[in-house]
Length: 211
Image (cartoon, rainbow, N blue to C red):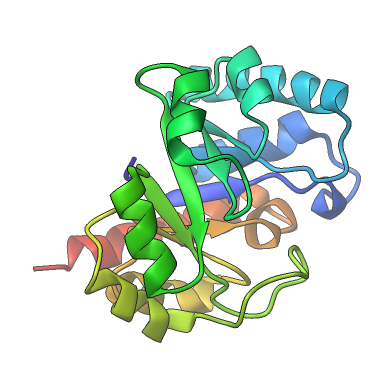
């Protein structure tokens, strides 16, 4: 899976807006992958949000990934699941989800990235790029230099994540990331569509300049 702008949900940042409106705006701005990530939602709430996002992403022709919950991913026919280091092994997730589904894995260093590639991940999330309030139990900061080092060792698509803003995006892509994954930078923006468009344009420009 080679995305460019990977947007995660985060209801704490919506400023009173509804999930449907926030994500629809992100899609209009150029998000090409949406991840449902709500750590404090019940299973029922995740299922309802997943069905809503599945409709929106299908209409937009983009991917829907569910964080952690393989059961929810299967129930809503998501395109795949994103796993953490402590979640079920990649091969087990594939067996549950079925053929053709995407499995991504969070990584924080070269060793985890190499292991993810060997285990058959479709892409890796790599981070955090900076300290972030959306995930307080993170590993040490990876930063753009870490992206550069991981890119030397793996061929998998790299989705950089963790505190990323428009000001950081160009350097991260130049260092070898395929995509940036964001929460507050898009869904917490006053103008969600404009924020997404700015990030997508930066990613497109920097990827287009690669030789």
